[in-house]
Length: 364
View (tube, rainbow, N blue to C red):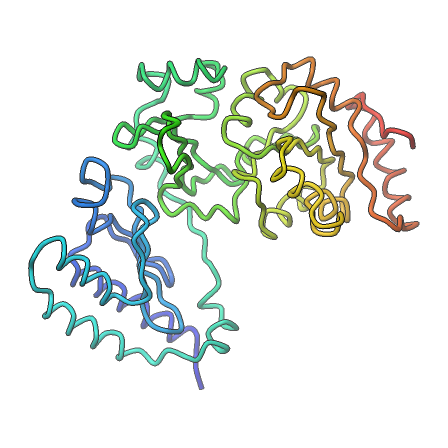
């Protein structure tokens, strides 16, 4: 009988051995993952280094695969990684290949169905040591080129420091640290300061983005939540003082995961949606026939307002404090159809609780 606990111990030990065989730097093992600096960074990363470990080796039902979240190289087996190293270095990795093959066959990996149902495969989220990771990069406001970019985007010094924005000189990116509700750090999402960069957004330190909401650690339960898409829409809201009205939260993209939806629902707060006024934003808001959009999913358990965009505006970056306040006041409450009696009662209860925000549920 397959025992997930014993398998986990075997995997962790063999991941440690793999890190030693490959001579990986800055390595750490966490469950089914080994995280380290990318062994290909000399040839595939900017300035030939991976100072923020972005490489991982993961165990699955087919063995050990790898993925670098920075340079994008990945494979379903470690033999592919050795082949790349041989191509870049011109050296022979036959001894390493033999040792890794022995490791692969030393573990009795279960079939896919069993693996999928075991707790081994479930993603285990562990925070990063803030005292290390927050000092790896310089403060964005202290660097002239990043400060000029921030000013050009309308981001204030106060907002920059409140959000603890950093700058990656090697990649020329503004980095947004991503914390959970307890203030634990789980990685960074970086935006290139050059619009010519093909990969404008890049995640650092294995950021588990599908589980994270940018700004969650600032949530004040006396205020509603305002949900936007992007990094700079989020920073702009703090720059105009929107945090006095609401809790700005960024999805970090137009798409959303069930994990993000569940986390938003768990806050038990009134929600406002202000996703970009484009096809992607509208699709994320309303989904297919209003069935799988974020508005519908949130409105199942919490009062959810959809802000209507004024003519000529399509991005939160374009809004002033007064404009945002007026848009929130005139936002439409999203109803699930058919409207249940229970939901009507919930709305009536929340209507009285919501008076302190000085907004109203339109038409009800």
